[in-house]
View 1 (cartoon, one colour):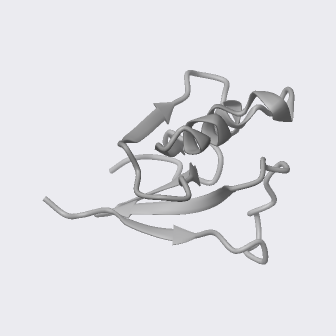
View 2 (tube, one colour):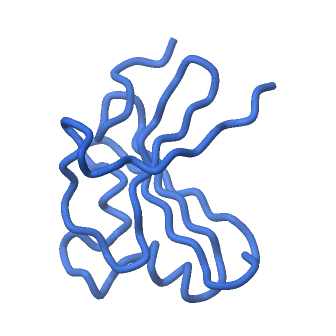
View 3 (cartoon, one colour):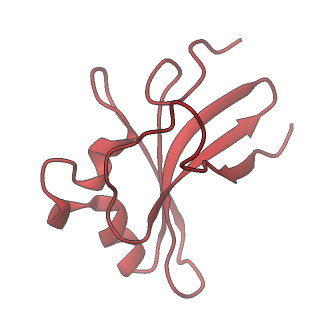
Length: 102
C-alpha cells in the first residue's frame, strides 16, 4: 500500500483559485498512487491529538467544512484550535480533484 503524499497547492497554479479560507486553513493536493485529490488542511499549533477527515456529500466541496457560509463557523479552524489535524477532502470530480478515480 502506498503512502499518500501531501503538497501545498500554490496560488499561482492555473485553476487553483479557491474561495477565501479561514486563517490557518490551506489547500493541499493528496497524491495516492494514480489519484490526486484536492483538500483543505488545518493543523494545530502543537502535536495533534488525532486526525479528523471530513468528506462532503453530493453538490458540496471541501470548502463546506471551512465555513464558506460564514467564516466564524469553520469546522477545520475549530478542530485545529482544539488540537486536531483537520483534513477536508474533495471527492473525485469536485474542487481540484481528478475527474475520475482509476
